[in-house]
Structure formats: C-alpha cells, structure tokens
Image 1 (cartoon, helix red, strand yellow):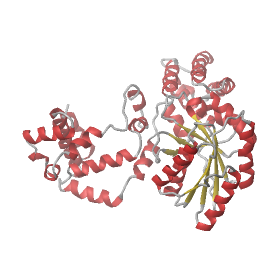
Image 2 (tube, one colour):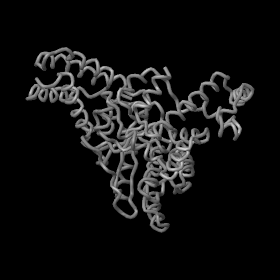
Image 3 (cartoon, helix red, strand yellow):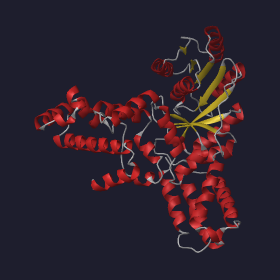
Image 4 (cartoon, one colour):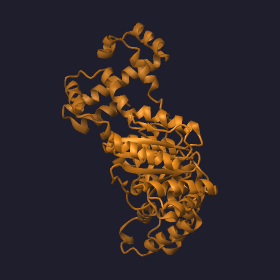
Length: 443
C-alpha cells in the first residue's frame, strides 16, 4: 500500500533540493506536484487542496528556514500534516460493559467476517477477554460457516441460530447466552450490504438500536478507494459508528480511503488488517503510517511485533548456547519460526527506514523461508547439531530430500557458519567494531 504515493511524494520533494531557501515560488511548484500525487492516490479533491493549502501556509510561516535545508523542512511539515489528516493519534477501542458488545458493519466483500475473527483473537490474546462471536449474516450460509471455521481456529465459541432469519433476535439472544456462560465480550458479525439497499440499512439500524453496542466499527475495503469513503459517510449517517477498520492493506491499493476517511466522517481509523492470518491485525497509528508513506519506516511497530514473539526464558537459553558456541540449526529454525509469526516479510522490511524503496520491485511472499526450512528439516539430528560433519555425500542427500540443489545447501551452511561467528563476536564484547570488521572481510 502507498508505494506509488510514496514514490510521487519523494519526487515532489526533490524539486526543493539545491534551493537555498523555501520561497513562495518553489513551495508552490512542490505542492502542485504533491496535490497531483494525492489525487492519483484517489484522495478527495477538496481534502487534497485543503491539505496542500495548510502545508503551504506552515512552510511559508517558518522562522528558521535559513537554518535547515528546505527539502527536509518540507518533509517534516508534510509528515506532520499527513498524520493529522489521518487522525493525529491512535484511538482505543471501547471495552466498557460486561459483556462488552461490539457491532461489526460494512459492505459486501469488505472482509467483515475475517475481521470479526481477527478482533476476537486480538482481544483474547492482548486484552485477556473471553469473546463470543455471533453470526448474524442470515442471508449467506457461507458466512456462518466461515465464522465457525475462524472461531475453531482461534479457540473462540460462535453463537448461531440455524433457521432463524431475524438478526435482532439472534443478537439479543447471543448477549443473554454470553452473560449466562460468563463471556465478557460479544462481537456481532452482520450481513454485508449496499448503502443503497434501504431494507438492509434499516435492518442494521434495528440491530444497532436493539443491542446498544458499546462500540460500532465500520469495515472498509481499502482497495475501493474514494468509493469506500462515500459509503462510510452514508453508513455513519445511519449508525453514527465509533470507528473505521481498513482491510486488505496488503493489496494493490492507492491509499485514498486511509487519507480521506477521517476528514469525511470525522471518525478515527482504529484498526488496519492485511492478509488472511488471524494475527494480521494492527492498531492504527497515524504518525507511524505517515512515516511509512514518506519512506521513513516504522521501527516502533517493528520492535513491538518482535517483542510480542519474544520469550524471555528462551532468549536466556539461547544466549547461553551462543556463549558456549552451541547455537545449532534447530535454534536457527526456531528463530525463523518467530520471524514468520511477526507477519508478512515484505511488510516487515518496509518498516525499516529506507527499505521501502529498495523492496519496491522485490517480490517476497510468506513462503520466503520455505527452502531454508526444507533443507534444515532434511538434516539428521546429528547434522543439525554439528554442521561440520556434513560432507559432500550428506549434502547431496539433504538437497534431494529438500527438493533443492547442492548449491543452495552449501550457501545455507556457509551463511549459518558466518552467523554463528557474528553472534559469538557480539557476545564476547567485541561489539559493532568487531562485527563490522568481520562483515567487511566477507565481501
């Protein structure tokens, strides 16, 4: 997401490079290009114009322009305004009530049911809630089946009433059941609908009125751009929802919905989702997203994702093994597993400052480690523990067993050996100087 916008904005800022100071003329030229970039990203014209007018006013009103490079100043101003445009700061979900009732609404195909499962998983693992998923899409049997599958996958019960075609009654009965069973969170997944479908809009409004949810979330497919923003406004007029969820951010989307929706409905974006994995859900931080749009990365989110997978006891054991030079392929495989749990590899790389440009045309899928894992799993326990015994005939056997070639096996063993040396060097206190010396010798 935002790749094209990031590239266009980067080109826009280059117009200021080499300029001695910010002037009304070079600012106007730069912002004209910025406005075009926003429009190409499917941002509403009025919002794009208002945005660039605000940036221009702030750029020309700075007192310290002579002390900084104009390009850097403009990037900072645009970054701050992008964050403000998307809400300024993260907004928490309301978890008051016992049980807390959350109503999920949205268009057909927006990813509501998948999001319902992700939200249940998120609140169960991060907030220690005991959720109950409620299937209120009475028009599409596949949606009920999908919710059951997701519920089983994350270990969350799903409330259904086979044959009942009245969502209001189903939702009310589900809340009663949750109270009876001691569940303190109820997530109601409703039928997908079209804003122009008056009957369906009346139905969701009736459900909303009957159960009086503590939180109503509107799910938006970010790939639909400005259309999603217009639909959100119509839904908000009927439901007065509390927040927006942007789904499918891993798709080929221009980002117009994320940049426009806050201004149009005056409601915060609370979550963003990408991919089908139940863990692929994040709280939306406007400042972090602004950094990513401008190619500055998002180190804070990357560290948080790493910490979620961090096991202190395992780390302590691993540290001891490194100190004794006992780090083996089983440990290596374990570390790969932890990295995979953090999310999509290309998305993670994009959180590192400067990496989004480098990764633009690089295709990295979720199976990026598949070949490495296959090679390691084709080794015997003795070979994993002591790679030095892996001679030529063993390497041929490992290559055949993993469906790779001997060159890939050789490459992995060499890389593993260098990794062990680097880890040992850092552990022995030689620090970055020793590490950089080792790396320079590898070239």
